[in-house]
Amino acid sequence: MIFYFSCTGNTRWAARQIADATDDELVFIPDLEDSAYTPSLQDGERIGFCFPVHGWQPPRIVRQFIRRLNIVDAERHYTYALITAGDTISETARILRKELAAVGLPLHATCSLLMPESYVGLPFMDVDTKENEKHKIEEAQKKLEWFIQQVKACNKGTESLDIGRWPRINSRIIGNFFHRYLVTDRPFHVDTERCLRCGLCANACPVKNIVGGKGQTPQWNHDGTCLSCFACYHHCPTHAIEYGSRTKNKGQYYFKKEQ
Image 1 (cartoon, rainbow, N blue to C red):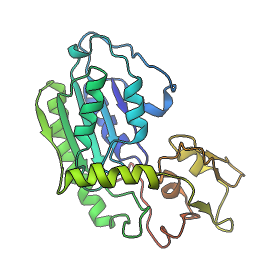
Image 2 (image 1 turned 120 degrees about the vertical axis):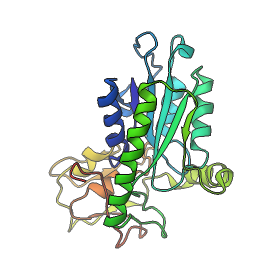
Image 3 (image 1 turned 180 degrees about the vertical axis):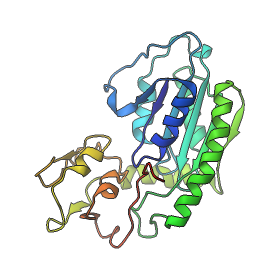
């Protein structure tokens, strides 16, 4: 069974390839109820976790999900993680390992994929050029194919991670600040003249934090569920969604099948 979370499609693309190659069931984490969860697993079935990095840590929704997990005979399952990021992942895998250990799951294999950047919530951050997007995806495809073979063979000890420089500072200091103060939907607003009221942003939100379907102007709930993943921003066909003034004149990205 593969549990995955994806915002702009990078992780979904990778998780689907793993599922196709292993014939393992693919489960979108936000689709599961917010309560204790005991998955129905076959004896010795593989357990995979696929998700993007948020502020050099696993996304809040992924950590909360793991804490609700109840795996029977956890030590009998081969467990792996595939992490996507626009840059480095710092201590994301270490944090994940600790979360899994708390519910009795070992982590046997880890891999990170460098994918096109989608975080645009800070003044100095923007999407990649089209050329760089293409290059990242091509290289990620090669690495993913290698990792799939590791997973199919249930190889233990496999680790290929883009940790980068200053992992402790990034994940523990900057990451904690990021999740405490920068994960919020408060700055999101809509240019009503450009908005088509098509409902794409509401449909793209993985945590259903936007009210407003076709024919309605989108409104964010401001109830703490937003993950600042920017799926709404990137899927807007007229670039009508902005995040304060921080996204002005910036690009958009989401994974397309033709890429």
